[in-house]
Length: 317
Image 1 (cartoon, rainbow, N blue to C red):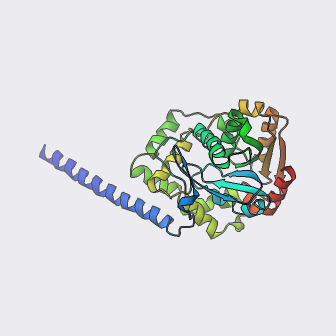
Image 2: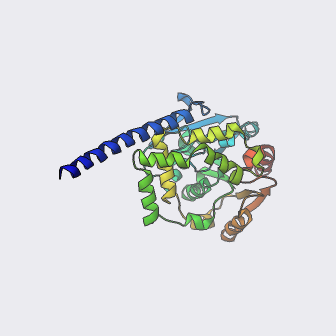
């Protein structure tokens, strides 16, 4: 009996020590990831939304354009750095960091597609104050379409850059995805798993294999900025990834896509996997959708070919 008790005490001490060490490792990882402070901000650059502070930047004059980055833990307004100056010559350009991303607040909540539907609509109403053209990247295309369907008077033309497969958006939270979300949200140990998933080598792999047509175009600044964006807010950063893995950020857009009257233009990188098939699927639902692709680009044509991307937008705007 005494032996068993002694073993339990020893195990308890070892577990506590191991937990403390992992906690310190996590703190060091987050601190080192944000040390360069590449994503700078000031108190004047925030919109006090009901669910948290939203970082945004405004530049130029003319008809408004809102640029919405892809919905990943790595993403931020930095995604549009090669486009802001070009568009601001003729338009008032707004770029933001979505809730849970980059410099915006990262509350410990479940992030849903409808949360971002509300954010986009509220941002246009309370910050821009007029009908706005939208350029949305990746998974942000889904809640942009739903927001337009809910309040069409706020939206002008909509540009969707490499939107996701419609079948992917139809996936709903299940037992397995809910379990993954629960495990990732665990204190200390879930945070360790998050840091392993979002390590710098995985960020580099993302650029070289999925984001860029020419993997040699990736720069140290790109990798460091995306890595920093995933670690601002310390352990709160993991809650968005947990919601994405849990399928809570998915929502079917088929019905909304079919009924929208706004002009919708799909832009894909020529090298994007399934890009052409995805465009065809969207056009099948809404034949009025226009499609185009940019040569020698992949998932981020606005980063790889900023000039060509801006010229393409100018044709429609």
